[in-house]
Picture 1: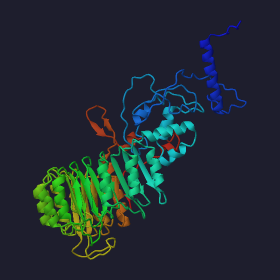
Picture 2: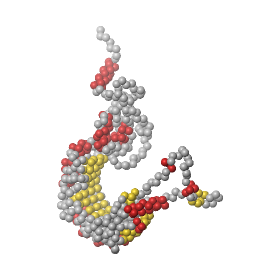
Picture 3: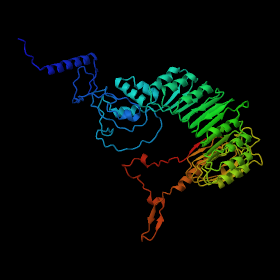
Picture 4: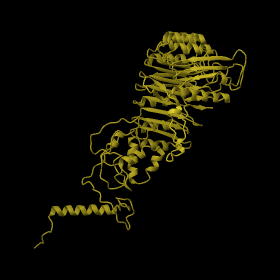
Length: 581
């Protein structure tokens, strides 16, 4: 007769399964620290109550964005302790993002939402949301080091990399391609990538970016030091055509392009710097809105700018912002630009074109009457050209830059500020300067070149007069002015300086006289004190009218109070304006 089992078969099978699971768990050897307080287990009696472990495991979910990683029901640090699984809050800042974008405040009705103000972080236990908040503020190198701490931190860092949408990397001088590739493979959902290169950049790195970032929309590449950008025009064209979601491309060190043909239906912003002797420039980008082309300052540049402008007019009709910096800019290029007639053009910047004259200004004024920014720095325009600009663009122009224009005088600058009521930024650097002085920082008092300037404007916020060595008197009455550049104004006298700008925050005065900085600081302090009236008002005994009380009548003196420390009686004066000299 077979003995009857002491437990039912179903219960026995469950017990056997539990025993096997516990045996496998013992083989994993677990942690040598207490899961409740974090102290070593050997000879330790925990004083904390046992934690409730959920009976049903929750399968991990793939993380494709920050919001998905934050709203996952599995704790990001579940391996650190046996804490109960909680649902973390959503709307986290993008991981690996270094911007200070304000977080949208949303009200959550879920009672299980985490709140860092109410949750208690016990010793040895990191709350999921707390650890996430700490790790997301680390740079990429710090996040790589944090992943080596333990298994839980490594898992959290992995989710952080997966959730990253923006990444900024500084590539060291001796770094190999594997350094960039290993970082990019961790971020499959990357949208914005910024590279600051200290080593050479070639087609292999560009192919690695194209393969590792399928959702890339914004790419910025800058070079520093002795780094060389070896990308050719054909390689750049293939990259742009293959990245169909790319909307913004900014690249420096493009001296080896030779020529290019860019085709993209999504590209809206394109910046290329350090261009030189391009054989062809084809832009087949119908949605291009902003274009910036900076050429090297070499006289042997053979780029045909007229052909380039004609091609832009046929394929990029939606352009709003155009910036071209080249010594090959001429009146012929301006005529080609006006013949195209971009209807949506709002910003036009033609820099270093010494052959751009008043005739060019007349052509621009007749074709583009809605410009908000006009930059003709380095041109040969005169006060007559400034007058044309003021006649055509008084209702739209808010930014005017005419630096390095030696034919402009202080009278033309004064007339422009008086005739442009919407002006907020004006750059007149090196305009009112002494032509006989090779070094603008040298004090020169040549007769006939000492000029005075009187500017009164209600909306002007930034004014640059750097290098105006012939300016010996300046009067400013700009209530909204915040930024003033007086670098290398070596002939400006302190007794001839009047600043009535109560909101002035930053003044550049490098290369000026020492007494001038003292005069600036004094006048700014007086303007600030005059703008802030802290005098109290007091009513007469009969209540008939109010009078202004003297400071001695309302200032509190606590010198006799023993409980009031002497340090607190000191008046702390805040510096209202920063002067850099």
